[in-house]
Image (cartoon, rainbow, N blue to C red; front, side, top):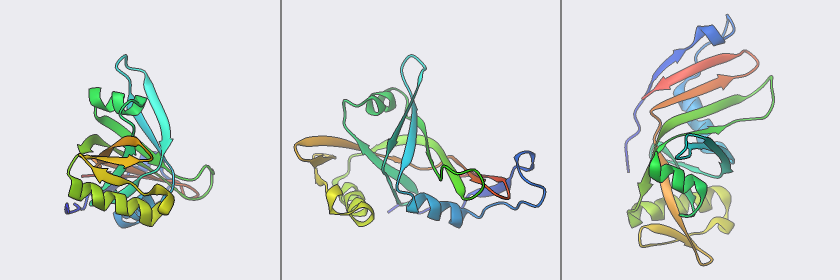
Length: 169
């Protein structure tokens, strides 16, 4: 297990309502853990962006996700591990949208992979059961690489009272 660090929290008043307050990190972390769908943004070798939806779990201070080794996001991360994961509600006047910026680190340790696999089942159900072997997930004859993105910086965009919070780790 990896210990989570408390980030520096700051409200960006340039992009916030006059009465807004910074969102506390525990609320942001809970939102990241509870979300069902995330959007992963990576960069292709030629510099073009690539954005794709995926599912993920929050474990040990990081978002963890998997992808096939031949998929575009895996190829992009092999070249440039910097990425962003976003989640939130597609509504304008309520909720908290969240962004995590960091570097995707491959997870190859089978013990850690088993913990991540268990977190997938706990969050998404038995449909998302993975076998762990040889430093990867395996499901129905397919291999999936696993990555963890610990936040370097994260943002919370509160809607309604419009507050932009930055968390620096």
